[in-house]
Length: 299
Image 1 (cartoon, one colour):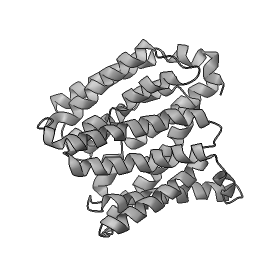
Image 2: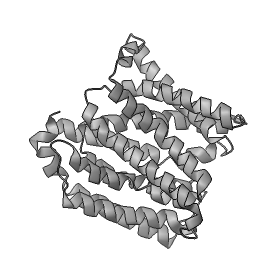
Image 3: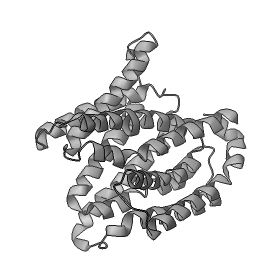
C-alpha cells in the first residue's frame, strides 16, 4: 500500500510542474514557434535523463530495447498530443481548444475502468466532473462561445484529449517498461518536432537571459521531470485520483500568473478554485480504499 501511495504522490508532482507551464512560457517571450520550442524543451528533457544515466555509470542504451507497443504508446502519446494541440490551435480559438483538450483528466478516470483490476468508482467520477466545471470556469472567461465554423479545430482538440488520456491509461499495460525509457521517447519526440519546425516554421531564438531561463525551465520542469514523474505515477499509483488532481494544473497556473503580475484575482478565479479543490477532496475520499485493494499492487 505504501509504495502505491508514494507513486501517487510522485505522479502529482507532474501536476505542480504543469502548473508552471504558462508562467515559464511567458518568461520565454512567447515568440518562439511552437514546434521549435517543443524540439528545444524535449531535447532538454532527453539531456536531463541522459545526465541521470551518466551518473549511474551507463549511456542508457539498454532502455532502447523496448517492445513496439511501448514505443508506440510513448511516442504517439508525447508527440501526438502536442502535434494535435498545436494543430487545433491553428483551426479554432485558443480558449475553446483548451476547454476541450482539458477533458483528458476526466477521460483518464473513465478509461482507467477498462484496465485489469480497476473499477469505476463514483467518487472519482463526481470529483472529476466537479473539478472539470472549475477548470472550464477558469479557462472560459474570455471565450465567445463555440462556433460551427471551428468544428474541425474542436474535433482535433478532442483528439488531443483522447491521445493523452489513452497514453496515460495504456502506460499501465506496459508498466514493466522503466521510466528511464521515457527519456528516449522524449528524444524521438524532439527529433520529430525539429522536422516539423524545419518544414513549417521560421527559427526564432530567445533574445536574452530571461527568455533562455524560460526555455530551460520548460525543458527541466513541465516537459522533463513532469513527464518522468507522470509515467511513474500512472504506472504504479492511483491513476483515477491522479486524473482528478490534474485539474489543479490550470489553477496553479493562474495563481502563479497572478503572483507574477500577469493576472488578477477575480470572482471567477476564486469560484473555480473552490470547485477544483472540492472535486479533488471528493476524489481523495476514495483514495484509501482504492490503494488498499490487492489488484492495485500487481501487474
